[in-house]
Amino acid sequence: MKLRDFRVLTFDCYGTLIDWETGILSVLRPWANGEGIAADDSTLLAAFADAESTAQAARPGALYPEILRDAHARIAASFGAPPDPAAAQALGASVGDWPAFLDSPEALTQLKRWHKLVIVSNVNRDSFAKSQKKLGVEFDAIVTAEEVGAYKPDLRMFHRALEVAASLGAAPELVLHVAQSLFHDHVPAKRLGLASVWIRRPSPRGEFGAARDPGVTVTPDWTVGSLAELVELEQKERIAAGA
Image 1 (cartoon, rainbow, N blue to C red):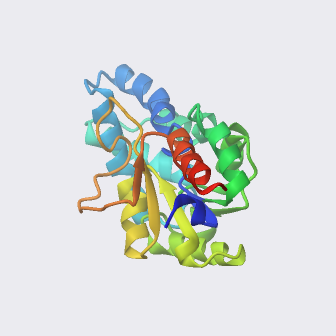
Image 2 (cartoon, helix red, strand yellow):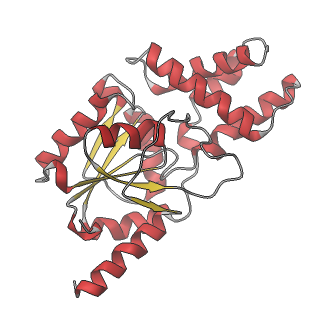
Image 3 (tube, one colour):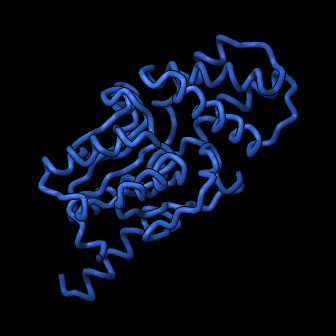
């Protein structure tokens, strides 16, 4: 299929539309420096990736700020540092401060002219509401871990997303999942036979950053370096088709 053939685009938010690595490091870096932890940004983010996914698997019904507080405690333990409730609270409350990638608002505005847009995110509604203000568009639907009671890569998140897409008039073959994380998004999307786009933004912080290594080979249908590049690809398709 062509990009222009899809009726609904489902989006991961954090790492794809919102620069969560910068946001996470804005809390973890001062804490690590204060504790005398000699870890570079890639190492801190790898510790976050392990701690966050472990916390989500252990407490699938917990709200995301609670997951972040739990993850901070696990990160501290992994470096042999004492628990720091204040730093954990700061991480849990930081989601709304994480910046949007510069191309996100304009790219989403253009994509909304062509498709229905749905968020599928490992977050709670209140945290996402703060992020949405930075993205500049109103999504047609929002699926959160809070309402599903599970965190990606749990397939329940994607089953719910497909139910929402169906309510918007899109069968699964007309749904395109757009995401950065192979672990959280592309592996489960492919298990369900969904088409997907990997937003593989260049980063000096390692291949996976704040997301875990998926541990398996997965092949998205498209790979682009930014959301703006995805828009450019679809524009070219539409021009070639006279659409």
